[in-house]
Image 1 (tube, rainbow, N blue to C red):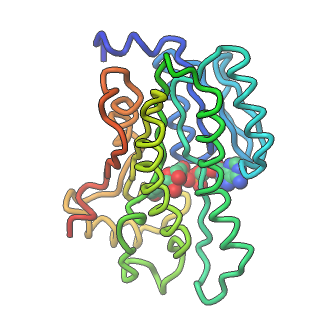
Image 2: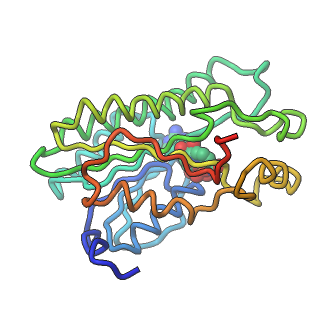
Length: 252
Ligand SMILES: NC(=O)c1ccc[n+]([C@@H]2O[C@H](COP(=O)([O-])OP(=O)(O)OC[C@H]3O[C@@H](n4cnc5c(N)ncnc54)[C@H](O)[C@@H]3O)[C@@H](O)[C@H]2O)c1
């Protein structure tokens, strides 16, 4: 795509959490391809090798480490242009066996850690510049799963996952309003279920796809225009929005 508005991405500073997972890995490669300098965190190793990708492996719920990492970027560049709060976890075990530790850990990673990132950015950001924050929500933040598509109710996202995703959609609105005058623009992308042959059985893929008006699961590529839209300076008047990309799953 050779359009003028893509030129702005050259040497944009992008900060992404959860870079070693399915969406994170795709998102890093996408922004690198656009010419950005990408900083990433994950508790797991990343396979991406690029001199424009600066990766740190640690637990995102370590608030001080996250703050230090972000502060180092500000010390070097005096800005972060795009922030993507993408890291998340979900226990896929039976609700009846849910432990307090699992509940707390899910809230810690999926909700408190993005708040820590946003707080750190808000403290450091120079309000003469624009910072675009993109939170990653989920369709399960706006509706319940249809439990019938999960084999014996197994391998489905937890109740607390849905709760944390509803909360991330809400804090998107809160911080969009709170930080608007600081020129921090906050939006959310809520994908439908992504196809992942490594972890999903064919039966699940088929059950899920039948429920989607557009007839298939989400692909990483389906998210790229939303990433572009919310990270672009041509869209600075859009804030506090949650864009659902699910092939129509949540319509029915
Ligand atoms: N895959 C889907 O179907 C789907 C659908 C809707 C929303 N989402 C959302 O998209 C985002 C990315 O999901 P994904 O599908 O790529 O999942 P994923 O599990 O493949 O990736 C998540 C990444 O976050 C990292 N992570 C988890 N806990 C961490 C911690 N404590 N510290 C640092 N890193 C940690 C994991 O190591 C992993 O690499 C998540 O916010 C998820 O809720 C995914």
